[in-house]
Length: 299
Length: 169
Image (cartoon, rainbow over all chains, first blue to last red; front, side):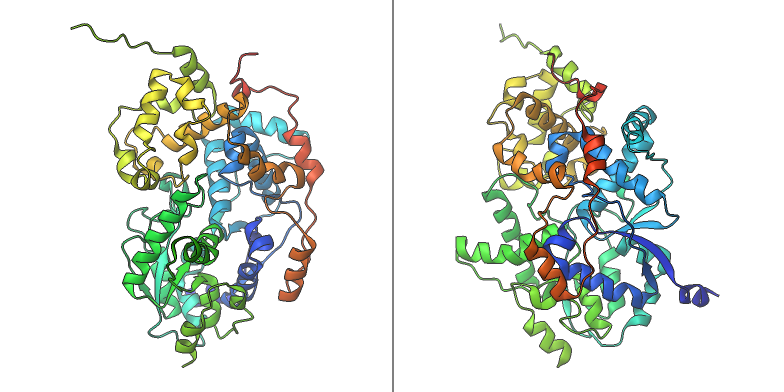
């Protein structure tokens, strides 16, 4: 019975945000090519803007941040599908906005008064999930296993969680913030080996408005991953990605240390396991080349 | 045994209470759980969320909203929110302070640069011909039109809401 239900197509509305389609379109490519192989149909709809970004835009004016997010949620509510996000920044903004609006009905009224100007209303019924969360909870990791065509046996992946998929857990409801498993289980389902390392849940530092501090934080993470001996780093946040892919070049320039750790978005890794090519998952666009891992996979 | 008199600036605290997320500063009992988990505090001694909260409790407006305020070193990781036993949501208090600094005109200049795009174009990253070319090369669909008029309409400043009353004019 369960197998039958997993055989049907599941329709979800993707919220792409800005970072993926505009800065790292290879991630969008990986998602568009891997999710259908799991039986997920992406129903693209009109009307979204930036989520908006949970750091700078929110720091400027939280009310405007909330109204913009509520408008996006109202747009999504016009369909009956689940709203899925693939970016940790978007999932943070959209889930927190929903939490605040459901927590404070006076605030919700105030926000809806603004939305009324454009004939929209946030009702509160939309279900928001991160893509990995949706795969774990609504599809089942069995579907991931069943889609695998190529063995990733022996490939070790040092996980970087990033902050916003987990914290605050009161709002995100994804996993334990200190001892999470969701990404480990996802990677295991692909057939690779998730590697624990000391700084697995340390922030990448990108949201800090200082120049030095983020570099020190990313360097601590690189050192931790290097010590783990992993073949690559696996992550799910585009903002973290910029800290680590371009970030390694910055660290090489500023501190003279070359780590050379390939940074792979987990849906790119899934694509490789599903038998997709490097080009089909956009891995060729990364600054730190993944040649060694690819050799090991193809070897 | 005379000690310096501590004067609490309640006027500032009242203002903070009215900004979204600001009210929770009242719950802080200075336990330092936030400091223990804070990555910015780990790498930068200048930054200490407990001290920021103490300054809010004392109403030290100048230190919190001045040009050299430490609030801008926060990495926005939400660890303090996760850990706080008092539901202070320290990061949200810091965001409230940032909103107040913006009103006051003391926020760092690059904050505007980092967030202007959204109100102007509806996206945080600029849509350029280079972006469109890159998408085309990867075989991705054409980007959807951003409903910027709708966004402008809901972001208009005309109405003053309770959350916006952070500065007495």
